[in-house]
Amino acid sequence: MAIVDTPRVTATPSRLSAGRDTGIDLLRAVCVVGVVLLHAIMVGVTVVDGAPVFVNASDGTRWIVPVSWLLQVMPLFFIIGGFAGLLAYRRQRDRGASASAFIAGRVHRLLRPAVVTIGAVGIALGVLSAIGVPAELIVIAGFRYGQPLWFLAVFLLCQALLPALARAHESMPKTTLGALALAAVLVDTVRAQTGLEGVGFVNLAFVWLALQQIGFFLADGTLDRLSGRTRALGGAAALIALVCSFVGGVHSPDLIANINPPTTALLLVGIVHLSAVSLLRDRIGAISRRPAVAAFSSFVNLRTMTIYLWHMPVLLAMAGLSAVWAATSGIALPAPSSTLWWASRPLWLASALVLTALVAVVFARVETRPSPSPTQSIIRVCAATALGLGGVLLLLVGGTSVLTATIAGAALLFAGRLARSSGQSARSERVTHIVGVA
Image (cartoon, rainbow, N blue to C red; front, top):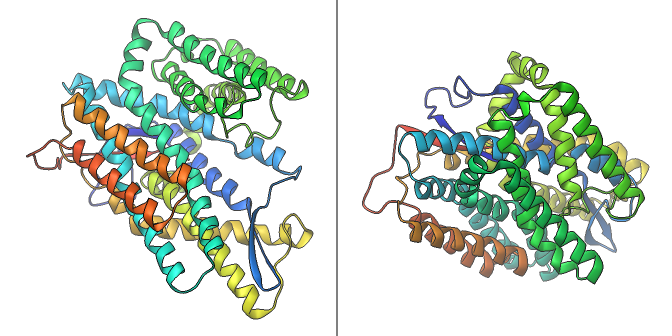
């Protein structure tokens, strides 16, 4: 996701401000929808002997490979995040804002909508426990909810490091990107040579930071100064290298498998995405200005973080209600990957998009409220970032329960207070929108 500064919209909140890169906005919106669709199609729910069974419908299947090639959009997300983040940081810096203030604003905008979602999920899990839902089902629901939150933690880290990496880009752009990419390769190598899967999680930093750094080259015009032929050859070379890595067994052809932990395959995917976007940017921009497309893009971009945070609770609710309906009606749900299951996917996917959009309309006001004045203290900013990361990591590692949601929510709330300038009122003249997904 990317964070960009836009004038606060009051009278017509469904529209984004003028002067934006509408093509990039459209790409963000498409990526957000892609994330929702990907997670929705992976939901598998059946009823066995009167008890609901929730599984990942893509486990052990072949169809996930082409689907992952179509819907694995996270590399492009982080490239767009670097593009928008660098431009936003430079604008704020030109207005005299400090790096600490920039990071504090990002911490506040990322964590505030997350507190609401985490709190609501914690309450929901408590209610389910109180009405007698089996504990093992509640644990599964909490685990499934927490899985996508890795993005929140990683994006928070990337944004916190953005000012330092932006300065490095200005002085030694190729060296900085090369160092991040080389670090990611070394982590993959150590993981492969030792067989220690846990080592791969170090690339939660290096892979995504490298992709964010690639976005800087798009933002500063470096990529546009290259010929179309050079950009096309770069994308083709990355694609060939990616296919060779699949054939050679270096990476899985399932791009979803390359995200947990992240591998250098995602760097190659990002280069392919970037090449295609740069070559088609004018055409994408023209399409993005069509009225219907612009309305879609505006709707999603003004609610991106809300959509990302709420789409999984919506999918879990859909799965639970489907299981209850099947158990009470006696009508069997189709087995995942069966013909009937595929026949029902269009309705399932459409329902997921519509319900997520409705929920986003309700809760988007949390995301788009004016930001309080950010703190100028680097110590407070570092503490806020650490608290935010710690709260999200608790849900990722420990699972989401009433207890962990309470602790994580409190940590995120306190992080938001640390990121706020003490004794100053909220700014009303501008608002930072979190846009971009997935």
